[in-house]
Length: 553
Image (cartoon, rainbow, N blue to C red; front, side, top):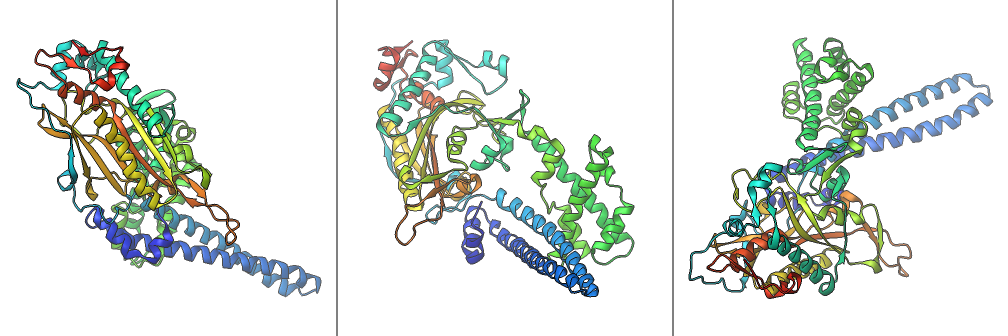
């Protein structure tokens, strides 16, 4: 989420920042300001009507006490009118807020000014000269998959029988090497870098993923479970989008009906008339179509969307309204989804795509005293991703799996100045692992288009892979500003002073980074430490974790 006051006071800054992220995205500022204006007007109208109701209610008693029945009746009529205004303004407020939230919830964070422009990894900028010198081999280099399979310790075929494509079964010394890497990384991050180790849940609810920004926009990358059954999140996303589709199709039919009877504009009266001609139940896709209570709720939400367009005085013609609704002007309100699915939403859990989600949510809905910041958390967990947008990429080996292990780092700080300093520190903590393992790497500053949706600034660390003769991502460290904190209501309280004895809580700033991706680190070790006979030299830093083993063969 974003500070609406800041958008209101400096819209051009937000327009420029979002255009920096994606060309044309900044135009959304106009929609935000329009909905914000409608929301503020509705709030003002409601408050004024409440004040009038309260004042006139007090006068009714006085009029009756003095025997002025006519005045009492007049005042009672004003109170009744005020109540209608309050109800109508409340509906307008809810509609405007929902439409504005739907926009804000789906928007990416604003890139920092020093983030390079660009749409993809081609525009990323290397920082410095990199670390380490890639090894020169005097024999033909093999990739990690061939090495692991030749050792008999990396089995993709058996994993596929159990789980499908993009899974791996490690065994023997490679399984131990993976465990050694995880333990080594955790020891470095906790004992040397001051992170607090956590063992978080692997299943989280939708609100946790909303807080860190994976939902609502990136649900296709997640795996989810309902009542213990595991299924892709598309089932939930499809149902949610279907409800929205039902509402939009119903409203399109209402508009068509109004147009067919010759009405040139949209009014509440011709909406009510069209509702008598268009059967709402025909537009509800499941058995709820025969539930009168649900049908009325469905009609009420649809009517509220159309009434909002009237009350906001946006000034669209009927044909323009048709185009807006046809294009999906209103995303489905969460309340409508919950109304349809009931308790299922509360128990709908997702397998974590990264420990960033549970670690960051440790501070959700809390106010942290200034003396307890910064906070630094780390965890080793499995991570689960559908890789929906990666069809055809890295199909061989362990580079891109549905399930992989990772050591995550999360930091919680006070403000932007601390956040940017912490980003450098966090990135150095990840670099320290690579240097201890003597793996050549480089640091890349990501361009705006290649950053994650929640990030304001991101460094990627890329490790050298001899078989590909290139560097590949092994860690990503991001500064998110207060983007996640606003979504999860995570705040801190400044220390009291003489001028501010009761300081107002402020939103924390959050960071997350890989320290490191365990599977990709294993890949890098296999390839960089391979020998001509197919054996693998164990890096010195890991030998104590491997019982003194020096070579895997």
